[in-house]
Each structure stands twice: as C-alpha cells, then as structure tokens.
Length: 227
Image 1: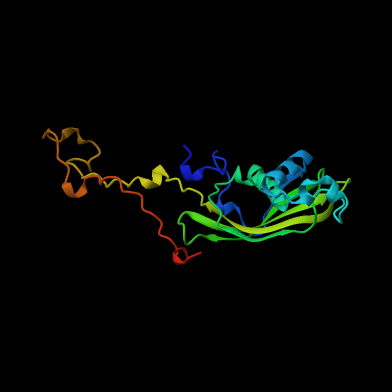
Image 2 (image 1 turned 90 degrees about the vertical axis):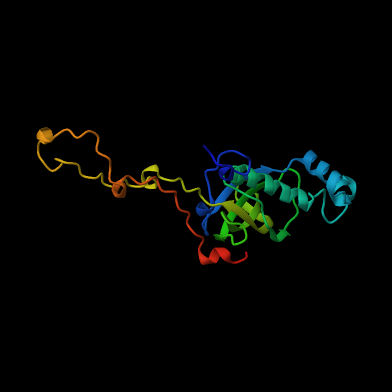
C-alpha cells in the first residue's frame, strides 16, 4: 500500500524520490507547441498589454507581431514539469524561485524544448522527511530541423521531495527468540526412559521475549539546521 507521503505531485504512486534527484541529473520535459488562441486568451485574462493582445499594434511595432506573455510561457514550463517529472516524483510544495528570466520573445507556433537540471540536493532541516532540491529549468526554441535555435526562458527554483520510505523487514524487525529451557532427558539420545512428570514449566529467565518495537533512525546533525 502506498503511504500518503509516497504520492506523486498528481496523487499517483510515486516512483522517484529525493534520493533519485542527484546533482547533474537532466530530465527531458518534452516539447510544447505554442497555441495562438490559448496564448492570446491567457494574455487577455491575465496580462492584457497591447503587444500580447492587439495584432495590429504589435505588427506595427518593433515586435513585428504578437508575442506571448512571459507568464504564459512559464505556465507552459510548469505544465511540462508536472507532466514529465512531478507526476512521477514524491513532490511536496516549493519554497520559491531564485530566478525567472525571459530571454527572447515567444510567438504562436513556436516549438519549445523543455528540460530541468538538478543543481543541488540536501535533506531539509525545516521539514523532516523531505529533501530540498535546487533546479534549473530552461526552454529552447527549436528550428525546422528540431535543433535548438535560442533559449527563451530560464528559471532557478527549489522543490521539496519526500525521502524514500524505509519498509521494515519483518524478518529483521522480529526479535530473536531466546533458547528454551532444557528439560530432563533433553541431553539424552533417547528420552523415552525418563519418568512422566507432566508438563514442565519454562524457566521465567529463559522464556521467549516479546517482539521488539522497530527503532527510528535519528536525524543527522545537519537535519537540525534551518534551510
């Protein structure tokens, strides 16, 4: 059974945990195509500046046409991040962004390759059971030959991910039974000639001890520092 803290960011059972997100890891988040109607609808709802929503003014400007709201572009990044990483990982909340840069205009029809790189990882001192992962996300415009032409977005942020649950091994968790008390004739090859004395009570000092409770692994000293 999957524990609640072993759920992915979309609620499904997680397959990736903090320990899997090692520095140097690059995760391909796929390719997204900018939809013209969605791009303009987003801008009209959340960022109605003229170069996002007015085709005529945008065409007559240095932009040469409509460009996407930067917040629409980062929303496309977020969706790819959820679909291709958080849907598999035991993700918790994020403590925030360190950097968000829009490096080039994004237009309808652009095909953007999305990826995330793990830059650092350490156990969280503020939230036991979680690790803090530092990530860099990028979006690259692809040309007709599917080769990257230009970086259009870069963001640096942190995410919290659950550590891998430790499943208790029943064989190790069970306390080893003590040796039963010897009985009359136990050291004889054949105890058939020993008198019948009825049931023999076990020596209280040698009776089997109850199963021990599993112990908890204490946090390392680093786990008591603040993030």
